Image 1: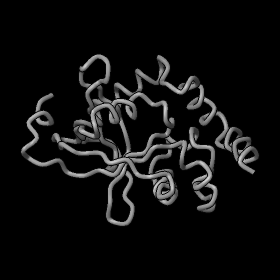
Image 2 (image 1 turned 90 degrees about the horizontal axis):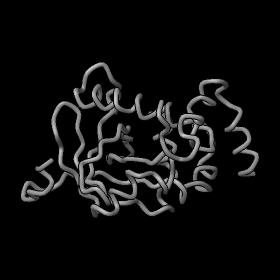
Image 3 (image 1 turned 60 degrees about the horizontal axis):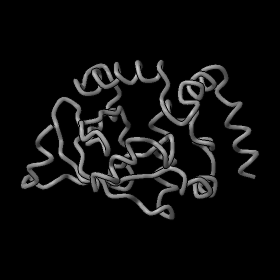
Length: 178
């Protein structure tokens, strides 16, 4: 059944979805995607002319130690806020967040120090579905339709990390630098 869903996902959305998948064809942003992400980062960080849930995630690079910025969408679900990896486990920002023990900053007009807590796979399905409802740009990368039953999301949940956003304490000076 999942194979049929993957095949359906590959064909739905037409040329736009094909272009989005091509831009991330090796599971990482290619040159065009990086350029577009850079523009999104400038726009989202300023908090203007962008979707309300669009923010910039800043996290320390696990090898370089430099701040890495990534445009992301914050999904709300049952009173919580979440970040979802549309590219799955191998996304650089996921590896960086794990190496930073969840310490990061979200930017949209101002800087918000946060602690990202990974959600266990068995709790991710409803959050993934909500994320796809809010993030149309992610849909080409997730092998189920946003309208699919929850069971379809449960089948892919282990492949798409989800992090719950918690406000970081004011006593964390390392989060304030950057």
